[in-house]
Length: 408
Image (cartoon, rainbow, N blue to C red; front, top):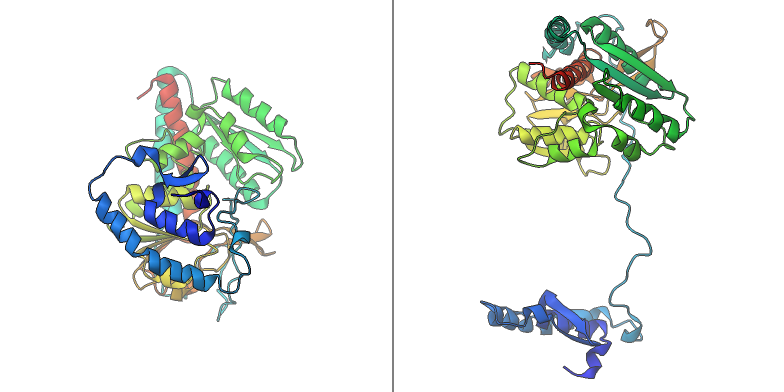
């Protein structure tokens, strides 16, 4: 090699990389093969010859690209970004089209005019699980004189979060589990939340700590969740729990409650997961991501659909199991589903309704009227995944207390 290669043009750099392979490096101002690869390797000569044969074609392509450029010396070979590319892409879903016929949803009774698919009754299944938990809590109290304790931290006044926390506190009371709720205003300081977490971490009567997500944007969710003691992370969102969930051969101490509830619904409804095609709509850390990981653990072939996915309807139509967690009302229509698919609707979206006791009702990501005519089984909203989330939270809290008291 000669000194002309000390500052190669794009054309020269192309020849150098093709000749020396991807191991080409700049040594003392000159391009050469990396020293660690200087010894002969099996097939190296054949690969080198093949690369050289492609040089002419590559040079021709580069020359054609550069015909309109005045000077090759002005073309940078490598351009480094001034800042790192953000990997945190928000999911901003386009609004779904208006239903051809608006769904008829009564606040208290389900519409019986729909020729319904099999209804997966999450409330019924959750009640059965909660009854078993309450029985074990009574046994623990009789044996060791202790009961599980759950602390909940709520920030702000989101209506859905307020509903979830209220339901969780009521469920704890029914099961005999002690519960404490610390409610911070929307504009609270992060240090106040961390201080409350630290206090609960050191309280031996508290076996589970739940930070109600999502948090306001001014709070660092990752930093706050990192404060949680791993053995009290009953919501399953500690980075170590999530990391262990993602890695084969490792087991998290706790599995996030909503994804765990989704899988429990499928299993208890007799739905086969192994070998099936599953589509998860939504990729949040709370539901979408851990749900996809759990489905993989149960040997499903999983595809994630998000706001930037091309042709989501077509992808969804190929699935045997569809789990939606997009938070967009009526996003998934009947034509998104293949006949006989099983649909788990995690989405909850409050819609004002003066006829309801709370002044609003919840609808899901799935247009129930349309989907129930295509699916073989479907969860309602409300009464599907929501009760299971709470049941799994109680289950995780009980398991944490069992570890603390060495109770079986």
